[in-house]
Length: 478
Image 1 (tube, helix red, strand yellow):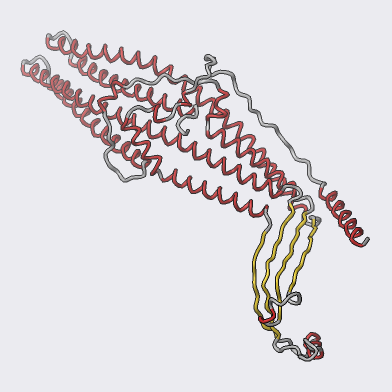
Image 2 (tube, rainbow, N blue to C red):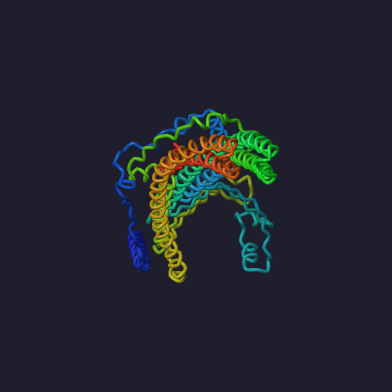
């Protein structure tokens, strides 16, 4: 009967505390929008996506693949992220430890002398520890035992906290994957820029030869009194301008090489490349698939989704703080006033067990604040997910449009280069026959140089656009 009354009393107390904990603030919630358009820029609904292609197959230049492979092993920022993964993995173990009972082993050895002029001392002076033996002075206390404590996870607070830590670890993994795809794209675009700069340097050297030949013709014309010294100086100035552009281009080559070296986690050294292959490079045909595939292909979207799941679990953890908690603690071991009696049973045997039921009453405002903050972080995660999806779609749409416009622009620029190359020969011929002014030769050479520069720049942008589409679609990390 006594046990039944105790159980009924605890049940009633538990129910009262639970009811008191149910009064929580009403918070604003919002469902996440996961819908995306069915196509990119009214394109066909082809489900084939270049994102599924492994980077080792997407990039066929052996020098470029060697650079990427080295960066994936040595890039410092990527290695820093790897340690963050380890930290997130350890957080899971911490949360798991909170969910499970805590068991410790302990021992104690102490001597205690109590003043005889206190209640405890006067009592020990009058009472023998055994019928024929006085209480030792000082009195020893030797203990050895196991102690356990466990918070019963009634409301799944600890379990949800462990799930939240595991989900954030998965988000960290996706964050690393997103860093990988960005790293690969950055190395590839820098590599193509380096090839383009090499070709621009070659164009400058070829143009200097053309200008030298034109200068010799102008000097001959001056000796024949057909032109003045002004024409000679204009042509000399044009050559010096082209030579100056050489040094500017070489500086850009050095900076681009060092940018790649930094991404590879090494000190400056030459980047192995075959610049002669640049003119033969053809941009890949990209298959975008359908926008819905971004939700599974893009690591940053997957990361945002995991963060959203973790934020929802954190709200449940914060909500559980309003409810009463039940803790159980106990211990078992041996205790005696001297070591020789420590394992004498049953006299030296000791044990304890206790239950602790509590619920917040006074500090509810602090718990409400934590709950409100957790809900705000959840809403923030919702908006972040929707923003990430929107940004991914726009990135793909922009790059697909960019590829199409660059392709048409390249064709127009190629025709311009061909026309200006022919114009150089025509202008030189007309100048020799005194049918064209020297300024026409100068302007034609300058326009041809700029057009060839622009053609190289356009091809580089085409190659980089394919890399950017590959990255935007979520390729490179798997």
